[in-house]
Length: 300
Image (cartoon, rainbow, N blue to C red):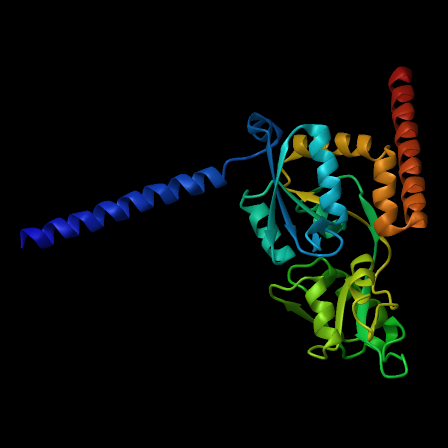
């Protein structure tokens, strides 16, 4: 009887320890984490998922625009950039929300819907969403423009902002377009599913689609689903100082020849020049606004 009582007390003690540990973890994850907390330890926790554009392993070498840009940031900031790999964007965003990660370093479109929930770094690329479909034996496709999407089911990455664009497209064209959010899939696996005939249509960003489609003979991505958008890294809304600091470092990096070579490698020279023109125009508008505000203040 006494032995049974001791076992029971032992079980209760373990349960209490686990409960206390869980409470500490929850409290830690709910603690705001911005630049001061990150700088104290000098460690930036970054979430990424596998894709040719973000993080890819080829012959034991790691490639990817986001990965290589992070290495430049690491050298400039002096921080230890710890990369954490996930199977999907959805998993990255979940762990950003619970403060496991400080930044999700995957090219994410800046949309009005997203900016209501997250902070974005300054634009890092220009990209757009495209339809992934199979070609027939003669190279033809069934969907030639957005009006042909009536009744089609488009597969997208779970929790992707692409959903909003497709919903708007359906309203604009008056079509019924079905959306299927696939769990634990990224652009790479969606293209593979289309190529093998498991699904008929998917939507991915154009740059990733072009890189992945090079591995398949029957994939077409010529039909645009959305307009060209700014793409950036994502942070939580309270990470204002971190966002400002990253933007300052990125601005320095973007002035270098090393960055120009990196960008043109993944997006092309024309895309780089277009992004530069947009950035210069934005800077000009910012200077004009500042000048006007200063003049108004002086007048007052």
